[in-house]
Image (cartoon, rainbow, N blue to C red; front, side, top):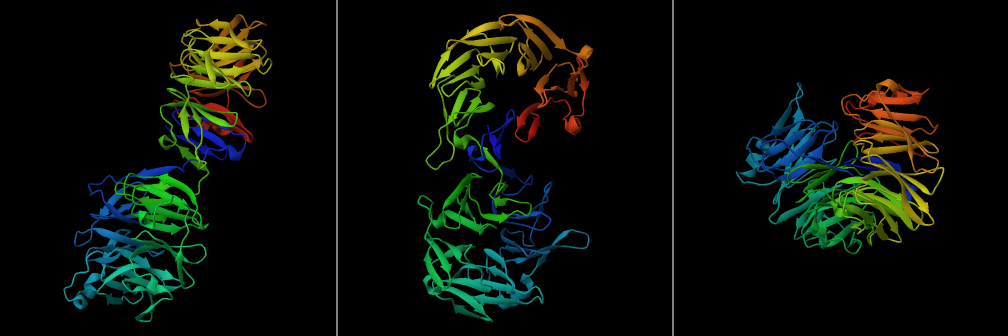
Amino acid sequence: MKITACCGALLLAIPLFGFQTDTHAAMLAGNPPVTRFTPDLDVYPQNFAITEDRDAVIYVGNTNGVLVFDGGYWRLIKLPNRQEVRSLAYDGKSRIYVGGFNEFGYLVRDASGRLVFHDLTPGIRGRLHDQQFAEIWTVKVTPTGVLFQALQHLFLYNPADGTIHLWRYAGRFGAIGTYHSHVFAQFRGEGFKYLDHDKWKMMPDGQLLDRHIYAYTPLADGGMLLLATDGRWLEYNKGQVSRFAVQSGIPSANYFSDGLKLADGTLALASVDGYLYLLSPQGQLLRRIHVDDGYLSGIVVDSNGGLLVIGDHAVIHVEWPSAWTVLDAAEGLAGSLTKIVRWNSHWYVLTGFGVLENEGRTDGLPKFKHLDWSIQEAWDLLPIDGKTALLADSYAMIEIHNGQARRITHQHLYPRVLLRSRYDKNVVYVGTSWGIAVLVDSNGTWKLRLDREDMQPLDATSIVEAAPHTLWIGSQEGGVHLLKLSADNSKLLSDQRMGPEQGLDYGGDIAEATIFQLPDSRIVASTRAGEFLWKGGRFVPDDMGGLNQLHPAGQTLAFANSRDGMWAYDY
């Protein structure tokens, strides 16, 4: 089960309900939406790198080669030696640079649009003297050229003239990249050095960075956040090495495999156990998002907005920043969801096994607990005042008073939807599976005034009070009914079922319909055939400002008011 919230409006899935919250601050802060894209190819499920080009085509470094995903189809491009691809980098123009095993080069489209791999290694075989360089762990596109980093070999390729510089190091290379337009590389055991023409020179304080640093992330203040295998959080800035202060509780630096800086300075870090951490530029935790169940090996900014993270089994798209937030099992939600209600500054989620309340956590994020009000399906919760609410569960009406639940009707009422009368606050209308009921508050005690269970299998889903003692009912199978009640709500005076004679087309054998009142008091019925306005004593098909053109075939729509207008939504 998931809940999605947008800009103060909560939209619930399975089924979908919507309404407007009191303030933006009332939003439930969960995780942004996460979408998985899993290759439908026969490849080994181990991925190492990810990048994306300007056409939003995604490239994944995989055990079997380069996986290419255009948003609809996956394909595999194998390297000439049929080995793995450890690293990828996009040059911002047309080339995807590829680091493999004893092989590196680039992908580019030919005149026909087909991706072709250009192997750069034949040009250096002679200088290697049959020596193998094994994996290319990192590829970086820099203003000076394209860096390919192996453990003991470092290559710098110049795309302009095709030349390749080669450096050997008896120790091991670590992180490579650019810092203030200078190409740098870690010579493990020595420190950080920058490239000055063809010579590597020690950076200021670079000797302090002699232990293995495998990745870095630019910082908003111009420095670099360094990820070290010994777990230290380090920052290099203005020629000095210092400790990068992160919020207490954030794991050590070696818990993260990769990271990047977003446009607003936020740091996005991919972890070794499936979590994406979002930190402020000052190292404070903004969000911890579970995106996969294993190692996350890379992260890039998506050209269409959000983040792309690579796991062993899938590419994961995370919307960030996002107006939407998703709450699921990680926040304690479970079961099928029917509705969400805000009461006394708390969120209550109605599910297939009762009611969940957001009790919150110490970090301010939501956490839901199951209340002992009911273990049956909860269909509706109607706040009466600050102390009292009415709950419709599968079989009976329950009064909630000061947090305590008390059944107030018999066990075969089957309530589904509740509506408090706008003409008499002591009256609540109850749409049931079999008809209509009325609850009346008499001196602080709610009692059944009317109980009609003989109106066929109705399965009421919506109620509109058109006038005193006059109700419209929309139902799952029983169509639309117009009811007239006695002045004391004790008797059903008339029940008119609407059908073709009244202009209403249900669009099939099942008379499913919802009923809604527009802000100007007009009555709307939605069926599988479209939307109909009650006009002059009958229903008339209406385009509803173009809504009918969007109406999904074979579905009814439900409606909800907001401060800015009206929502219409399907299941």
